[in-house]
Image 1 (tube, rainbow, N blue to C red):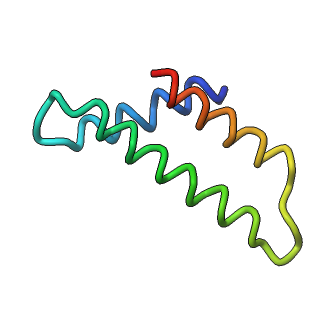
Image 2: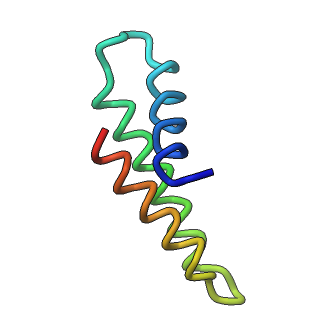
Length: 67
């Protein structure tokens, strides 16, 4: 899945979980928190982290911020 598609999917899931349909900003913030947690976990892997996965999630983060 491309970074833009993943970003849209994450924000949509967070948005749909909100009780108020005017909470797009909050949905984006939740999705960004998720991505930050994934990046943190990748950086703490004992075997080191795979740069391609980090780059992918950084791109997802950038796409979320654009939404």
